[in-house]
Length: 232
Length: 69
Image 1: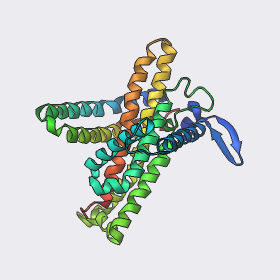
Image 2: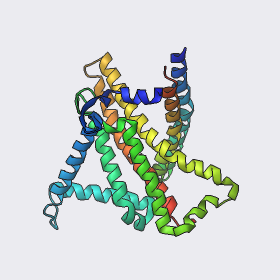
Image 3: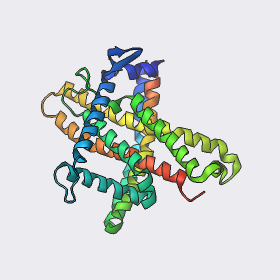
Image 4: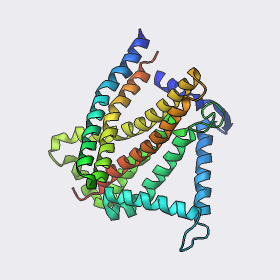
């Protein structure tokens, strides 16, 4: 199992402690911390909502409006209203995960490593997208949903099924490959020239983290609107 | 020898998508410059197209991991 050993050997995969039969590593602690941070921010932003927003509520509303406008342009107002919460959650969570790799000593300090730089996390997210796509499709169209696998011509069925199965694979590998590669390159450059030069790579990482979180959300939105759309 | 195979797997698999992404981005920017009012639509489609091309490189990376000694 050389593939598996590579993923386990990457920097944050050491087991920190055990809870019963489950081994806990740095990715999991960081993920829990990110979840708590997002939840606390959400509670603080929504604690006393005013008509004229200020402070954190202002930031949250601006972000929400931006996401909503973007999703509306992708899947229409109805789709954005219905699936926006799920897709927006993906975006915010992945964005925080990507940016946690920019924190000082991330990946080397025990308990701190970017969760999206391991395949387990990204595969989990992609599998959620896979099941959501088909469940939403069945909810929208009933049993007619399975008809679209036979749509252009019936003998395309094996190809259509392979296409559906490749989607979560490429979705998870894209996010994992980008973030893992970025982290590795930054670490290597830090090893060569510790002062100054890694900042350039980190600045690039800020942009790439945003783009990758956006790409994940766009692709999930396209898959979901493809399954729930009017075309079949 | 296996190390060379790993390096070639990821190295060669970056060439095609690199060229493709360059062409796609240049055409998209051309379109945006000609028609600034369509810039938003073009940008979203471009990012989507780039993401699909990038998947090919990522498959190369996967193969590189799988044959890594």
